[in-house]
Amino acid sequence: MTGGVWVAPGRVNIIGEHTDYNDGFALPIALPQVVTCTAEPTSDGLVRVSSRQHPGEEVLVPIAGLADAAVTGWARYPLGVVHEYAARGHALPGLALRLDGAVPVGAGLSSSAAVECSVAIAVRDLFAPAVADADLIDIGRAAENSYVGAATGTLDQSASVLCTAGHALFLDFGRGEHAQVPFDLTATGLELLVVDTNTPHQLVDGGYGQRRRECEQAAAALGVGSLRAITEPAAVERIADPVLRRRARHIVSENARVLAVVEMLRGGGDPRAIGPILAAGHASLRDDFEISTPQLDAAVDAATAAGAYGARMVGGGFGGSIIALTDTERTPLVVEAIEKRFRAADFAAPRTFVAVPSAGARRVG
Image (cartoon, rainbow, N blue to C red; front, side, top):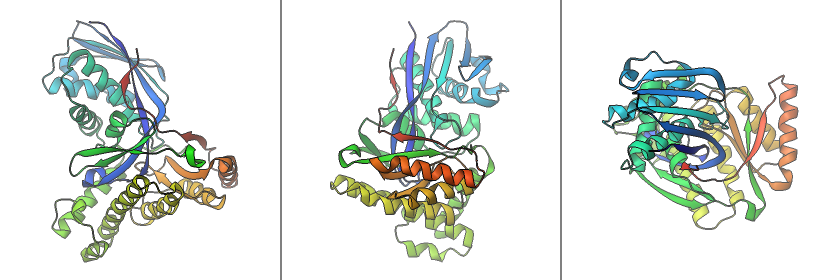
């Protein structure tokens, strides 16, 4: 058995934040930025993991001892995946992993899921070829939930594994279904600008898990298993607690926004019409879900003032990135306006790039 090279992309979500663990809908695309995993099988019962971004920090753990290993930092993500395979009964004689990540870390672009999925697909191809994509996605989720301690859903892993070039991925978490939706902005002279505000977030911090608990409490207050079951915005007004009411309002309205964008794209409408939906999504995340930051708000406001059709924060919140839908020729002006706003506010300089819908996880060597 020989090793090889696998890649898995980061993702940006067009619309549909915090809906995955509420059995709702989302519409991500994969980014061209990937995590590369070079994997070699061994026979010594050990897993070795190293990273180009963390030179001199190789971690070596017996596979049989992963459950009890005191692993911290970046290595939790790849080792969590190996642990999950072993816990599910797959025989792993030994493994050497070398990672190289080009997905910005802490930017809300799913760098952790890209690590997990690059390792997960490598381990599958080497040792467990019968594992289906749905199980591979769940292995990544379980690694992040249990081994890392972040209470995420499956949005990020689904996007990293299932996305295809030139398409957005319509995810229905309640039914466990997905579909590819054509998403070609270049044909209409548009670009999806990503602005990393250079304010890293950590999903293992308390805010993300707190929002998930609040959504569960809101669903319980409405007598439903998940907020997916609520489709009428007026229904959330029955929730007495104002915080839980705001959380539910975001999820219900966000699901509706996803469906509206999918309907528009499938119907061949002008993608510029997505702009106001992005703006409404940001207002909801800022005001009802309360996970934005001054940097994210400043980037959104500056992009909109500079002529973007719409902009919103993306990812789990409390830092990270925004997206802005712009005419191609206006993108440099939007970037300049954001940079100027950040300098005036004495924020760290943002990083920008254009998102291109790209392929999902795969073997490349």
